[in-house]
Length: 273
Image (cartoon, rainbow, N blue to C red):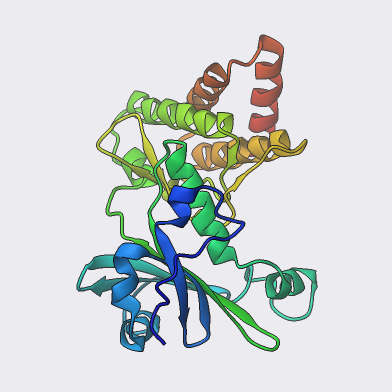
């Protein structure tokens, strides 16, 4: 079934210019959105079948999802095929029921990625976001542009001095604080999910499956969990000095008072240890 030419306007796409850049996609049971400049690529089932095949380079293969790197006539893309919310949500439980009956995560990822772009943050652009529902199953498909860059973990590992690692940690603290000031909470803030750019004071955010823009009373808790998770990873890899550099830069950017700074640093160190 070819892509319908009618531009889709839905409640999860609030801005007109964002809605106008995507079109409805409906093919082989998949329903979602495809970017206009790629819509002609998916007019026949062939390209979609090739993207879904397991003959490509598998980047990550888990029980609930598989990520592949695929070469196409238009360049390399990353394809994520997800069949459950997490590895532990298979079977009959609340998480599995929410995955089956809830909104498509692929479309949520598209929405938050566009929101990140509008706010001035970098994330891989989404080409296709779709869901296919069965009687007792649901699966999501996300196709995004390939971003070839070094991740933060590898960049830190190549540093020859502790001060060089601490400098990267301070940059990461500033960027995470700016992300939080824009009310975004990253779903999995690990060094492997943060890519370096030509701009030495910027990052590309990967794996935005659970990234959200939060305004409710719990947003402070989830922001702290971001800080604690990244502090733990830095502690395990590089030690106390690097973690302190990261936390100081984060607190400075957020403009914390002395008392709040002490509470956050103490809590983050306690969690990291």
